[in-house]
Length: 360
Image (cartoon, rainbow, N blue to C red; front, top):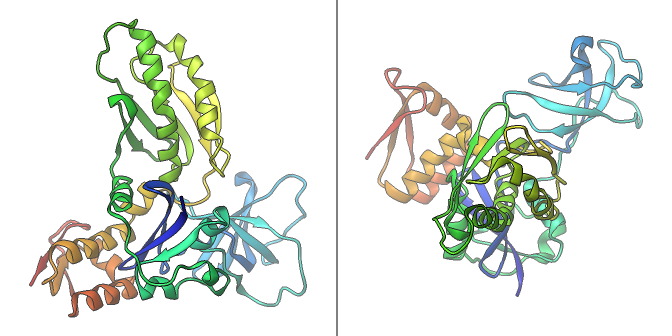
């Protein structure tokens, strides 16, 4: 029963899946043109102190800045001061990079990026040190750093159909659960809402007993989906068809199902409305946010063309989608290489921002 870390290439991104047999254990999207920058170390400069926000804005490069929270016992900083910082949280949810202050280590006359953070591939390889790397293309193999090359299986192997289907299913907000149940995941700016739908009626058992068992048995699958999709921040779960007073009994199986998660999410209890409250560290963008971002929508266009419209030579779209495509020229080049011909982009201001059409 071998453990594999599989890489599948698409224009502008790679799917990284950790698998055992036909089971998807872990997952990440890697977009080289849009790194999350978590773990990157910069020499920056204090742009502005913001006591009301409890921190300071730090210029990392002429085009990039981040927010540095400051504790009451932090060293005194001044505007214009050079500092060494590490990116502790990716830009997400409409907020920019979050930073943490590092101790000074030598002169701070150097500016900008000092050390880039680990890629999603490196992070997953560290979490699964016994996993063998399997790639589907020379392009994927070229992205494996020297430190991981000895773990690579020679040759090129596409995803097994079952694993490809499991990865595709992560894009669906409706999650099938054991016992005929379903969960609907709804991200909002403030939290992630998850509604568990009631299972089919069962005979021979008291209704609440059956509902409790169905919810309990579905929780491990749901917690695994939370990890695979990297849902984070505040998460509220509405169990199916269970009286509020009985929901406290679900906390033990929730905590057990959360234990394997490396981000150590915490279950805070059941709210007065009967919702199970979980908090999971918000470090990397969630899969729904990556898919719905302008860059994510642009890459979906290229995927669609490769799969369903390979004769396309011209993409006509609203200003938003065309701008997003133009910002990732490597993805356009990758797509054109696979199609065997170039793609041209044309903006139609009469179209909504993220609508598009194709022409042969």
